[in-house]
Length: 240
Image: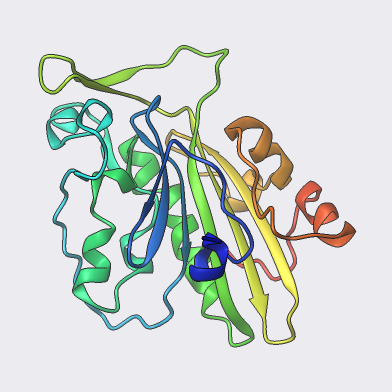
């Protein structure tokens, strides 16, 4: 089966992962090594209905137990269960929002980061998607680990045999298609820490994410134009 032919989210590409988890409204690429998603891929739902957050955090039992995060791993850790696919991106119906609270969509985030600059980027992405000329907004994001830096862990092997490494940073790459068929691309790497810097300071060439995260982004896009975009910082149309 050609997955990109049956899932709209993968129209412009889908990276590899140890386990690809197909939810109804987004896709996760899970890493057994890191015990969390390596990436998540979604199309932002424009049909926001004002639905309240479901807040039903729970394990994803599709992930094998030896690699699966549990609520106990986060308890008392001092880290937030940080959404990769934002709850507010998928709030048309309750089931859709509920999917975003699976722990396979969570990553350990510094509270000030999760509730600060990461939230600001989520809000700015939704504002971009709400522009009248934007037809669809594709978002892929995930953790980054720097192998030349020490990595902290949360969780306890006494609980369920799983410890979760704390990402050093997170990436988000945003691809929009407008009503004239033009594609635009913005990519970011944000350290997993409190920050009051403007979002523009975290712009990076998309190819930098690919090197650090070890994945290929938007690989179904072909041609020299998109190759230039993956290597360039994109600021046109962005409003933070």
